[in-house]
Image (cartoon, rainbow, N blue to C red):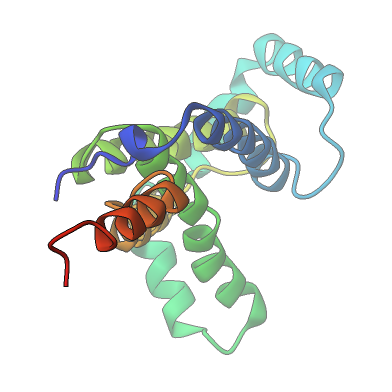
Length: 184
């Protein structure tokens, strides 16, 4: 089966999915950058201005970043009894499952394209945390987020896609053919 979900969606469904994608991306920014707080563009502007005025702060955040793959993941797995670690581990995966679904529905890309898109969105958000001084960069978040995107993509690919657009029309056609002469 080829990744042709986008071709199977009616234009209205594609538009609806695109609008839901925008809402999802807003929620993703709200959760990752604003930690569930109010999304404020003026605040982002002030943070960016502060970062530009004091580039040492961004440099400090970069040096504090986790650039060692699986370092945080190993820590989370060692402390699965801690709610914070469970939320961090599985939350980073779950947050990106919808992105994988949207990628499957709205693009024609395959697994590699889905991974690149999930990784790209995750990388943009991780870098934004440094630039806007609103969190910390963690390479393990990139790994977990990309995994979540691939899970969403895979789940969507498992759904049946080869169904007629208007099942009523086909059932009506079948009823006519069933009553045709020579039918048994």
